[in-house]
Picture (cartoon, rainbow, N blue to C red):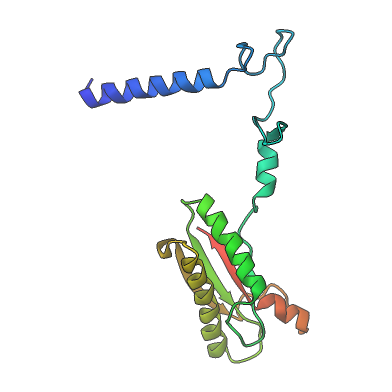
Length: 174
């Protein structure tokens, strides 16, 4: 065995021992063993919260957004509303917690206006969102943009509510 391989093997064994010892309960009986000494059912790992109560992994996950959220734009605009900025701040925090995730920001428009105009407006919307995320500290290398203009609507009715749904920047992980 090569010298470097030997050290890597020793390090892995040491890490496995540390993880095994740290997984034991305070009573020394190991995980899954009840106070009566019998094997219990497996439960989700938990940690003790600031108030001394147990906080489960599910509790922690519930506090985090499940995914990146879309932002909406006003008619014929690509500037960010206060609501859009708040959502982008949440998206930036999510991206900070998920450093290996790259994102495609898709610019979308409603079906009013020419195809060429809507593609250009969708591009400005996507780049507006990207620039804001970069200003919040997200690496530009993790972000890319594309404009779909009016080609991928989420709503098909010709109503203001539907058009408002289609005027968006969508965040797709890749």
